[in-house]
Length: 291
Image (tube, rainbow, N blue to C red; front, side, top):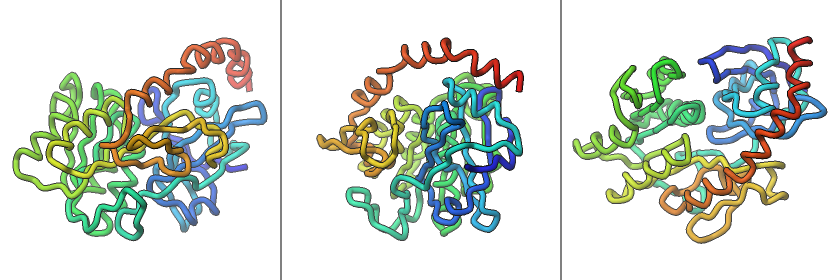
């Protein structure tokens, strides 16, 4: 059981929560995730650790309301308990201190960290970690429009150069993150690596943008996940023609080797069932409103 200490709404559908979890905060690293269950009737869902404070013993998660569980989670208030809060899980994106098979980058002097939408919550700890260790970090954050922009000020403190793009041009530069990335590369900037985190389609086209330049590109994958320990096999992804489990082999992988089309197909497999569950369990949402 974990105590919700602080809650902040970042935009109408995205919420930040700071949770008291000393043991997780003690060992958490960028790129890792937790699995939580709101109550005894709930499903298990993975959420990436957006930040952590070892001294205060807290872990920060940022999530978007997209289904029943995230809706129930969003109904919690400061002082409430989260029944299950387990982690840290997954392999850290420790680019400087540790080698990961297939992800070795060697010395990195300048890195582009790209976040799309709520994926910026996962990109933020990567940028913060690298920037704090002397790596020159360029952040490109992309959103559909101004009203859903999150973590702008936090990113500015965690990088050397910050670029904001919106699809409709309502904030920052109009265009896609891939447009800005290509412009920066073509201007003569040399990136030792690119880290892309966001919608699958965004990560796919970031990888297509960097591949002709031979720039190592890491992506954080978000397949369907249940136990987070490699036992269920639900989070399997094809990487370089081999089957990998995102929960234990990832969630970070060499983006140039990921079968993104297969990943998108698998992630759509339960969309109808998810919508049905939300409808049939509307009573749980109403009960939370009464409470």
